[in-house]
Amino acid sequence: MTLLLGACAPRVETRGNSVNIEDVATIKIGTHTRRNVFELLGSPSNQSAFGEETWYYISQLTETTAFLVPVIKESQVVTVKFDTKGVVTFVDVLNTDKVEAIIPAEGATPTAGNSLSFFDQILSNLGRFNKK
Image (cartoon, helix red, strand yellow):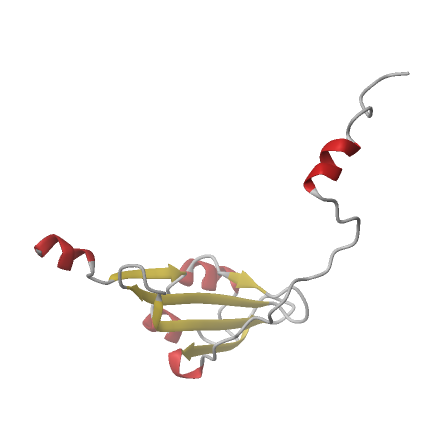
């Protein structure tokens, strides 16, 4: 009985790049550079591809019980923006209370090309490898 109850104990996992809020608070806008932020917080989870350079540090604390879907207990996104010279212009911390669930759209993405059955795929290769 003890083994069965022990198997139902929740597993707590940290996902992503969890940073210390105290370290984030020491970042000074207009003073710190990319190098300072990298040394202080480490490598970002994600970086912006367009517009002004922005680093994101994303982390989640999840709890999973047995075979059930993991529950997000805590999440955090730290955003750090830089100007063209690499100096910090903006720092923000978003916690669980500002996070919204995103529900993916149902359906499949159509792809170009032929839709062949299993036998069509096998038979289409017959004779392809014979040299004339």
